Length: 469
Ligand code: UD1
Ligand code: CA
Image 1 (cartoon, rainbow, N blue to C red):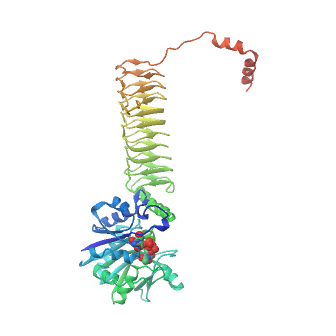
Image 2 (image 1 turned 180 degrees about the vertical axis):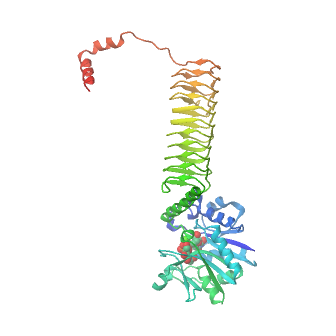
Image 3 (image 1 turned 60 degrees about the vertical axis):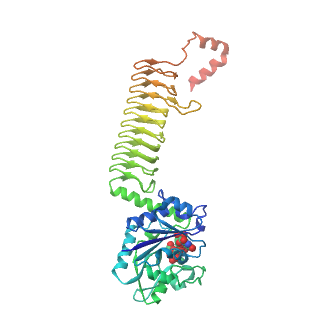
């Protein structure tokens, strides 16, 4: 079957109040226009023509060169938009699907139903419609007493009686290509908006003696994004769909109103996602994990059984059975092996961490290679910036680092070595050795007693007050 899709995306997006085309705004991490393109591809419609306007570069950057583009110089309406695709359609035998570029909820299933419908009868076109609780602003389907489609009337042109109709035009259609072209050639702009309405092609085809049928779908599937409030609503609807898909696959989501998951995310079964969590990009989470509360993962790979609590992780790999957070920050290009613990206020960037290594509190590890079973004392800092370059250190297996230590750029801490607490380590420490990098302690005998004598009675008074409390 010869099927070509025309997607109208040249509008000015006035109601969005944005410097960008409305169709490049994202719904659950994917541009609206990409949702439309993906639904078409899933339905097997790979030949796609996009009608684009002044913001065409943004759309081209998203969809690339596997689809065709036509520039609509002046925005004279949806009928005028489709007319621009005429050079692609002329001489073709089959069908043309027309979709608006602003409907991220369109599904391959709805597209397929319209294709089935038009191929099973002698129809000039099939309009995808829906019942709307509040049809204000939409074009309405006018039918005769036998329920046959007569025409579509735009809200602004409708009579009171027509405005009472709840069946709306989704702006998604499939036409016999030759008949679409013949009707487009006869559109006029004599209406309330002085535009060439694509909707008028339906009345024209029926006046020619053709039959137009319809497919009724769920109102949510037709949802169009014209302004910021509809964009929020589209995100809410889509997010709920994504969450339900994960729940059906065995993921536990405690509150579907407090978790956001982008479309490409994969999650294993028996994983629990707690409130306040956003999972973005191509994140892949294993089974039996607990993610959240209040965490953000963006393009992260998480192994089975890992717990990540009140933490942020971006473009990194976290192994199995790790304990991350609360309040950990795992930055890009980090690879954490299995059974690692990174606790409160631990930040890791562009580093590899071997299995069973622990940094439970207040530690920064940057641009470094860390072996297995290393213990970072509270307050350890890898001083990875030498003033010009970012160079971390190498910490081999089983190293024990005492609290509040600084490990300078390029230093190697040999296998099984110890670092004394409070050290600033500027040179390599040999395997099995102890590195001490701090000044020697001096004790001054009776120093406090002498100080007290100098301060006299006031100190003693303060002290006795303290003991009263
Ligand atoms: C359109 C339909 C209406 C339907 C509604 C469903 C018409 C006349 N009206 O109204 O019956 O109920 O969709 O959401 O078709 N566009 C262009 N070039 C133009 C004008 C528009 O490419 O000159 C594109 C827009 O970018 C948009 C799509 O066509 O993606 C629809 O246009 P829009 O202005 O949003 O139409 P609606 O007022 O929503
Ligand atoms: Ca619209």
